[in-house]
Length: 244
Image 1 (cartoon, rainbow, N blue to C red):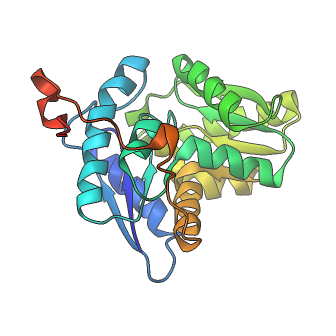
Image 2 (cartoon, rainbow, N blue to C red):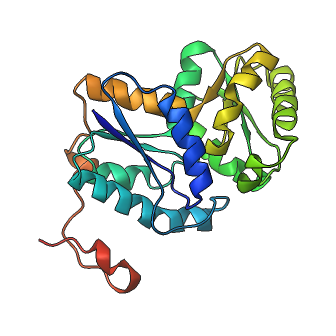
């Protein structure tokens, strides 16, 4: 079984953190690759960043299809390009927000999200509306630490735990979801501090992809996730040309 975890931003140190988290839950007989796209933003903190991260992500998935990858993780909490990646992939493609929110609903009645910048809270709410029953996501909180500063800011765990405590008290939530792939290494410490389930989407998505592959379930090629139609692209997108 070959699983490819794609970090949609181009920061190699974040890819290394994501890879370590994914490898910690990789089962026997699974080969895991963590890859950084050849193009894209250094971090994803806006709709603009997210849109420009998608071509690099899709190129990594297209390459994976040529290499017979069995399944993919999209390792950014905005789940950028998830539907488009599913059009390209034969196997399952799972986003980390998707996996984290589904996992949260298996162990509690409601969850709150602790994410990075305030401007990304709307995207988290949008995804919660897609992935969870109405009212299940009870709050989204921002620690206002930029994505790339998560690696070096010594106050990260304190600020994340403080916000999570506030969320548990204010929202009456049962579960905390970490809203950034760069927070993956905080999961164990936050769980120990809070005494409730804290879900990291990187680990959850990696396990879910393995489970779907084991079940023999791939992406349906009927309807919306069928292969994209043959079409020419121009300019910087010329390499994405799909011949008839």
